[in-house]
Image (cartoon, rainbow over all chains, first blue to last red; front, side, top):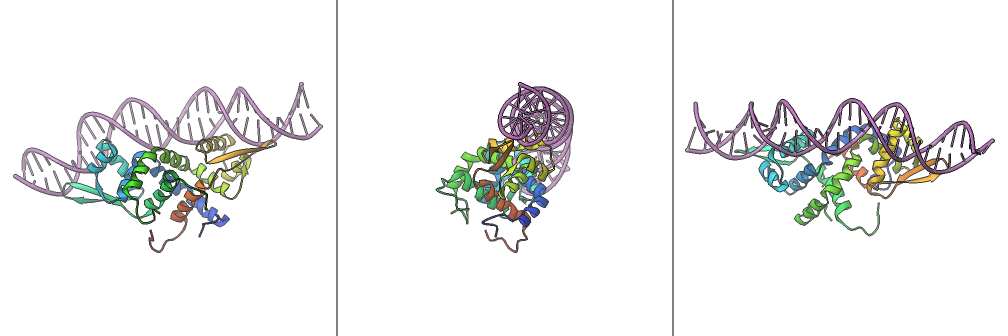
Length: 112
Length: 112
DNA sequence: TGATGATTTCACATTCATATAAATTACCGT
DNA sequence: ACGGTAATTTATATGAATGTGAAATCATCA
């Protein structure tokens, strides 16, 4: 579905969800948060690990995770002292794949 | 490609483009701009038309278009007094399709 | 229990984004 | 050239987002 064109009906649904959608996009449109999601695609990570991977302060990473949690994109799991974060579902991956496709591959021609 | 998993190599490319990617996502993560793109999927529109479709002030729409122009997502075409905007390529559509998929359809199970 | 480690929360300062209104530019008809 | 319509730009004011350092939480281990 929806591969060729977006119909008027689809459009209406889109308008209805525009606010939700833009909120999710806002959550993604932050370099740090985007990278967190990228890293989580390869498996769960502790806050400290993410802190190192992103070269950012712990409080900052924690707040970024809080935003992603709020959006329901990631979920925490405690194990001993550490808290492991992982992706809640495959939504982030779906978007990341498009983003990857747009920014990280050289395209020959538009197929859509 | 990239349907099952995002490899480490892909990850590195992603990091390299993280800033560009988040800039594009920022452009999309605004209810008005998101809707503009939706409307443009169905064909080019004048600023005035968009103004009405979004129920927003002309200056606001114009600025939103400016942001999208800056990101290379839309392009203007002058015809007489009116300026017609259209999508530069199919990137917006690709993303919108995922967004639509995530927000406007009821999913049975995750297939990715 | 008390200390330690990991994470979160808070308060603040700063930067960024957005809408509004006014001024400006471009095009057309007369 | 003048007046009007369409769109952009500018300046401004306001609100949101972000990082920082300090304080608070919360679970673990001795």
